[in-house]
Image (cartoon, rainbow over all chains, first blue to last red):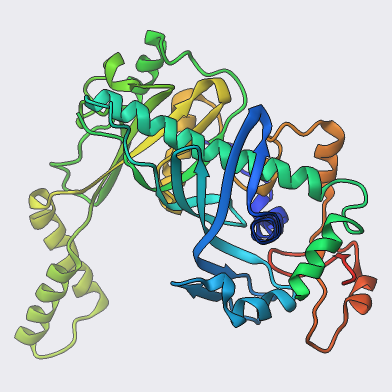
Length: 175
Length: 229
């Protein structure tokens, strides 16, 4: 049995939106402290960690990767933002309560790589408990990214985005 | 019993339609039908893909407790590949060329390969990869704990062969449809165009770029909706 042939990939048609999402996370982190109130009363903190890749503006240009230290504070990063470049990949620190994840998000695919889940809970004694705990942490990470992306979309797709939130982000990118 | 990884990559995949309840025997039976079958003794280059369970890497059993992992159903599949070792092939070809004192013809090279294949492959052990996936039936979501293209495709094929349901990979459009947007917002999502952020430097200003608003752009190409800084 063969799976049906796929249509055009959402990576091809909407990959830019994942890149805008990562750039927006950076904007929100720098301007609002990176705390997000998510549906269901969830409160999470998000910060950009030590790895950034800026998307190539065109096929003739190159991606630019900054790693180690505080790449968001570098002149190269500010210059890329001033040139209107979006983040293609970024390593994030995500915190909720006492739990903390680090994860690299690929904008065009929204794939998660290099994730590190929170430490196993102290009360987990058996393999089965440990696995259930890790499942909960994988799911939480997926749901947080999904909810953050949903928050971004509600802002991005709203009427008047370009004149309001988009304009504020444009000002920040030009700083 | 092994543990689920605490680090690495994950690819979210989604399905629509009805999947057997993972608690029903029907679910384990479906896995059993597409179970992993060994190619250890195969005499040709082969790849085998099939389900196994966390408690049994052979694919012979799918006990309920091996599939249960908290809120998820713990799927595991195994990919074995048997290939003729390329270095051995090169060594034998070089030896044959030296013995003859000249380059081998294409036919002679093929004969050496066929001869080595029949001699060596039964003795070669396949490479083994085991990949986990966490299935959340209530969310119609599966998290494949791998990001490689080949593994994602192999998993998608195996899932379809098992449950007759195609999986949709995560991307900004597929994921956006699962964020609870209502119909009108989903329409906006379908049609949204990239923001063209203003450039402080460069030969073109944001205002002149705005004239191109509305065109569909490939990933990373700053197009369409322009913002004046």
